[in-house]
Length: 223
Figure (tube, rainbow, N blue to C red):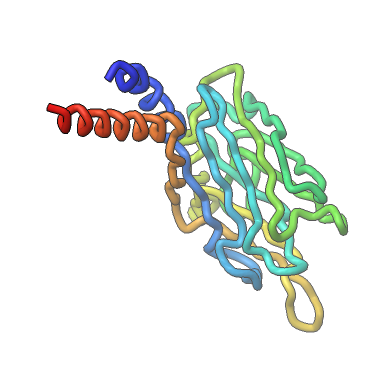
């Protein structure tokens, strides 16, 4: 029982560490050519890595051969200044050039539609594209404010009264008629909560409970 009481604070702190995780799954074509691959063509996962640090993973598991991600756009809570964000590369699948990241309040448009605060521009140079099964992970933080994943779950500012999206992406290299290639502009259909991994502490707690129950049966059996 003493071990159980010692584990409880660890369990609850671990369980709450990733409470803000969510996916954007890009399944909605709002301009241009529909990608040939299976939606979601690209995904972005936001999670609270630690206090004040949000981890972003961009992946392209649904792109067909020849298709690649050209750009991705995100929003930030309008009460926060995107120019104060810092991006730290964590890991990636390799083989592609790291994106150029630009920030500015309502400074970027996705196909001229919507105004976004963050612009990831990927290479379009052969052999350096972000293609199917590629992924890249960044930590995002700020010295000016404490970030949480929910700060990126924000609609874009409408441009011309249309196209308010949580995020947007440009997919290039889409096969077209007469051996031409096209571009498709896609957006997430909504927010998908990320499955929460079971904390190690919770597994340990289960073991303690089992042990406690086992010892109780043994003791009761001896009475």
